[in-house]
Image (cartoon, rainbow, N blue to C red; front, side):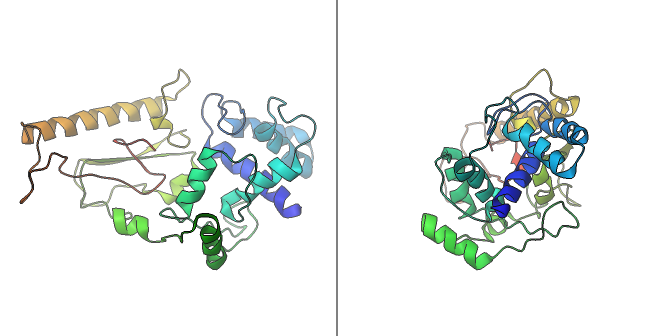
Length: 270
């Protein structure tokens, strides 16, 4: 039970930062604008360490009182804790289509073990068990993860040989650490890498909102300018709208760029 409670609280703290948008949202639970800031204020008012953790978790799991006076431990608490960094996997009645899709993706091309040491983070020390992880994927989905698929397919951080790429990461997004945060030396001008100040998880790909910080407005404008330039260049190079490679007369783009998960390419939704 202690492990589940730990995962439940830890997942809340991490998710409030990942989805720390400047306006209220309700992806998994209703939360206020910049929920991590509201949680920090609640923690300071709590007065005790345990009370502070309870107050923070309450902002994520019960901000509007939707959970009532007592959380459903056997259902909701265990489900949320089980999904915490995919350390365990237990099917729950609370699992939705998004949970299912992400579970399958992390068992195929997006293998992302999350070790912690309790020194550079606020987590308990944890070393992923690759064998157990693979077995759970086979049990659930009948597949084994491909740990190197992203790097082999998209080149990892070696994007300097590409072109027409616009990568963004939110300053607040915990996934920023796994993304490309700087432009490689010698990369062409058509490759742009931007960090969005006060930006949460792919904030630039969300719809505009009156509460958006200027940083994301500027990045969206830069993305639109870059995409228009790429489209115009392609049209000028292929006036008939057709690409003909060597021995190939098929209609299509000259190149198709993509990026590892949690970096964003402006030409695709994520």
